[in-house]
Amino acid sequence: MSTTQERTCETCPALLPPRRSGVRGPAPRFCDDCKRLRHNDRSKAQYTRKGYPKSRPEARKHKPGDTFGSLSLVERLGKRNGSQWVTAECACPGRTVKEYNLSNLVNGVTVNCADREHHADPRAGRFQGDVPAYGTVHHWVAAKKGRAKDRLCLFCGAPAVHWAYLHGTPDQLLGPEGTREDGMPYAVDVEQYEPMCRSCHRRWDNARASLPAQRVSLAHVAFFLATHRVEDAEAA
Image (cartoon, rainbow, N blue to C red):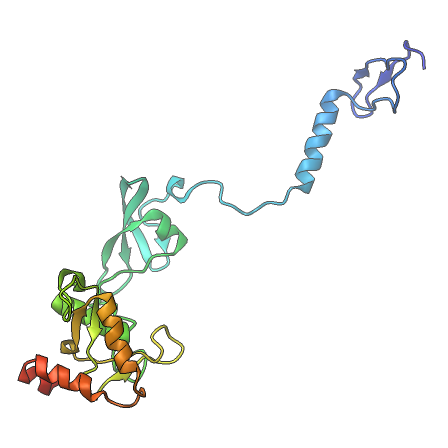
């Protein structure tokens, strides 16, 4: 091939430089600009969009009045520890207003509100008619007696960890099947719970577990009657 022969790009009319003698392989068909554009086009055709949002939830222009399910944004409060916080109003009869993390609010990972006057506790009465659930009773104990971590263990005097069920009543209940508390015994009476450390709580429950689930442990009942007031024992 003569070095004086002129060649043009197959895409645009740009002249290609003459091919150097002694170089093997096909002569270039496109100029550098056209090569780059063709490469970008192939990359775009092969790219699969991941569906990620183009901006963070905090950066979007959410304004008062925007709705998120049953919640409507009332006011933006600014950032706290790097997160944007807002106040939102629930569409419940009481129109409860509460503060929310905007990211949680947008992604739908927050509850409507925690006002049990307008939103009943969903754990209460979810089985056995109107009998409260296992977790509900433990919330009642904490509300009446405070945190177990602020008390001392009933047996060894070490810092307590849990509110332990004493198994001191024949009217005990069992957690329903298919739940996290499946088969776990508990009682509605909050006086049946005392603070215990982890090891004492385990030994106390293991002693009760050595008996069949439907049988009452007379030793546990006797301990409860001996350590509690008469009116509490009668209530149990």
